[in-house]
Every structure is written in structure tokens, then in C-alpha cells.
Length: 605
Ligand SMILES: [Zn+2]
Image 1 (tube, helix red, strand yellow):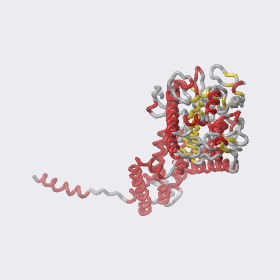
Image 2 (cartoon, protein in one colour; image 1 turned 135 degrees about the vertical axis):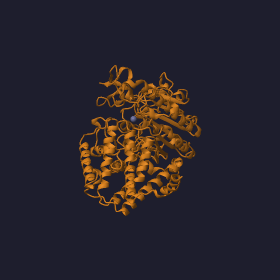
Image 3 (cartoon, rainbow, N blue to C red; image 1 turned 180 degrees about the horizontal axis):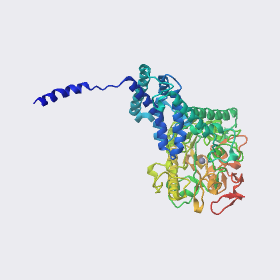
Image 4 (cartoon, rainbow, N blue to C red; image 1 turned 60 degrees about the horizontal axis):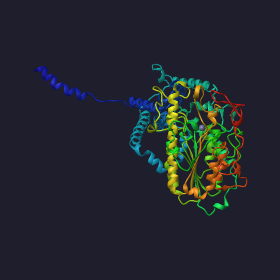
């Protein structure tokens, strides 16, 4: 009875004594630790999402530790370091979200996209994200405020020498570790880097800057890579600005052809394909049904014998857009593109892209893209990642068709990602018609011949999706009721470990690199206006064509003339004549006179 009484009386009293107590110093340490964790998270996510974890640790996590270490140990008052880390906290949360969604870190291109989006688009994009954004903002801001206030108030000592503490608890140790790390990183910078797809002969001073390219090794690191990213935006923007300003006063003196002045001017669309080879199109005789829509399309002419002079995007696209001779190695040229000629002739011009604005491969095209009155880049990722599919360009195209319904001439260029590796990233799940289209383990590799079946299937699925995108684009033009025409042409082909050949990818100087699909579609309204152009195109469809002809042809298609127009280069002219077709193989040769080796169809003299 007594014992029972004792327990009964004592227990509640003991409970009351236990208090949840946390000292200000502990809270300061916890909050500062959380701040460090917020900064490290994007790097850890990047390492986790990378194919090569070791490289990602060296390029992302290690520089991040060095940068964070320096910020932390540079100031005697730790709350000051907390303030700097707090300024980077919300951006770090956004960066983490970005890495989770796109498998890559933010870059110059993303900044461009953010700067060009309007408020309505941003709102629409963020519509489903308001709750996580609000919650993570409240959480992050609370941590930051608590860290700064508690560190200031607790008088937390961040001593230069700590005798009885662990290594990382002395400021001098953290500082020394950071400096040592910095020296290691600098040693890493001395290892030369070579962009893999570019032959050394193509190096030029304009879009190459070896120091910045080497520094860019650490661009994926957060927050250490931030200055590199800013430097890269500044450098690329300066280059583009320079290239554009040189041609500020350039004029083609282009005008609408006299006979068309009283007619309704057309809506002309050029779709620039990517890495597409004609022999994988059902339309070109491939046994698989990869282009079911286009194979049965009326008013469509496939050009059977079209090639590109170069098998790299950065070299081939400028040749389509301008009169730049293919032999000219520099990515810039002293003339503008046909877009400016359309502008001069009173057309409204649009450039809609699913590719990047800036970069070694993208900038030479962007120089011309920005000649358009309205320029929009939609893909927040680059060709190296999943990013967005090409159908993202369709609703903007539909909008243009609506807005420009009564306009006097419209030009739209759609720059797609088509079939660029990784093929799996170029189509949605609903287009997985040919399977297996990926390996059982890991990701699709362009360097593993054992994956040929999956590579073939994935590549064919990407063509199937191109067929869908083109069909949708053509439907939009058809429904516009305007005289409308569409040209599709790919920038180059691709090798797929064909028939015993060990080559994959492009830039291998094979016939499969250079042959491209090239199509022409027209609306019934266009046929009424220009039956002669359709007749000429039908006649020229089997003749040898190079993408050098696109410049002359698209102007002819829109009935735009200029003092030095060259009708003999237009596939829409009955005066079209075949010229010799130069290609970049073996340093440069005539495609039609070249020999081909039996296994890979590699060109040689
Ligand atoms: Zn390309």
C-alpha cells in the first residue's frame, strides 16, 4: 500500500521536471549545420544523378566543399558567413529542384530562358508548384534568420586555434583544408580538355576560349561554380553581341516579287531537324512504319538525294540559313541569314527553338536566330539531357497562325532536337513503339555496340515522334486557311553501328553522316498562287541537292527577290541546276565523286 502510494505520487512530479531545453549555442550550431547542408544538397543530388559518380564528385562536390569552406573560415564572426550563405540559400533550394527535374545544374541558357519568359508564362509554368515553393521558402528563410540571430546572440566563438576540439572546429584548419583543396583543383585545371565532337582543325578564336572552357569543369559545382557560370554568360553574350554588331548595317535589299504584291502573302515554316537520316524514314522506303503520317500525306514531296556539307550542328545549320560557303571554317560569316531578307521584304519573322541559346554547338546558330523579330527558346535543358520534347513548339506555332491570320507574310523557323542522342529523351512514353528501346540496366550508350538493338529501336521511335510533330505542324498550317508552305530538313545524319561498322554518332565522315531527309509540303491555297513552284519542286525532287540551297530556295518559295538572287540554286525554280556538292570529309571533297569504303561507307578521294 505504501509503495503504491509512493509511486503514485512521485511519477507525475518527475514528468513535470523534464523540460525540453535547448541552449542558444546548440540552436546556432544546428541552424548553421542546416545552412551548410542546404548549400551541399545540389551537389549531392548532382553526384547522385550523374552517370559517372567519381567525375561528379571531383567536379561538383569537392569544389563545393572548398568554396563553402572558404566562405565559412574567411570571417572571424561566424554570423557573417551565415549571412553570405543565407543569401545563397533560396537559390540553392531552386538549384536542388532543378537538378532533380533536369539531371543537370542551372546554366547561362537557363538564365536566358528566365529573362525572356513573360509573367503569364512563368505563372502558368509554376501553377502546380506554389505549395512546395511556399513551404520550402518558409523553411529556408526560418533557418537563415535563426542561424544569423542565434550566432550573433550566443557569442559563439569561432576560434582560429581550437585545442581540444575536432579538426573541423578550428577556423585555421577549415581555412587550410580549403586552400589545399583549391590548390588540388588548380592542378586539375592544368589537365587539357578537348571538346569531343569538334575536330582540332575547326578551332577558332571566336567561340573558343580554352581557359573558360577548362574552368567550366567546375561550373556544375554549387556555389563555387557560380562565378564560372556568370563568366560563361558574359563571354558567350559578348561573342554573340560582337558577331551581331558587325552585321548591324548589312542589307540584302530584298523585296517581294512584283507579281505577288497584290496577293495574300504566305505563311512559310522551316523546320530544322536534328540527326535524322532518310533511310530510317518509312517515307524514304524504310521497312518499319516510322513515318505513318507523312507516308500517306497529300501535297508532300520528299527530296530523294539531299545532303549537308557538314555533320555538326554548329557548322551545318548556319549554311542552311545563310549564303556562307561550306568551306569557310569560321562559325561566323559577313552576311546575315534569310531571316533578315524576309524582314526586309515585310514579313514578320519568328524563331522557336527546342535547342539552347548559348554554347559551343548552339551559339553559331543563335547569331542568326536573333535576326527574327520574335525569338523564343523553350527547352530549359540542353541536348545532353532529357529536357523538353519537340512538340513543345506546336502550341506557340498554333498561336502564331492565329495571331498572324491577317498578316502580310509570316516566317517561322522551328529548331528541333529531332533524333539527337540520347534518343530515349526525344520522345514521350506513348511513342515507345519499337522495343526494347533501352538496356535492362543503366542508360542507353552510343559507345556500346552490344546495345545496337536498343539504339536502333530508340532511334526509330524518335523518327516516329518527328513524324507526329511534322504532322501536327502541317495540320496547324492547313487549318490556317492561308497560303502556307513547310520545308523540313535535318542538319545531318547519324551512324548506328551499321552492318558490321564500328561507328556510331555523327561527324564520322560517312555517307550516313551527310545524307539528310528534306521535305516540302504546301497548302491548297499556296498551290493556287504558285502552281509553277510545286511543278518545279516535283521536277527537282530526284536531283542532287545540298542544304546550301535552302537559303535561295526559301526566299524563292516566299517570292522574295534581291539584286543578287540566284534562281539556279532554288529547288522551287525550273532553272534549278545541280552544283558540285562539297562535304567536310578528309579535309573537304566532292560528295558525288567520293569513294566509299564497304563497311562504314566512309568517304575518301
Ligand atoms: Zn546536329
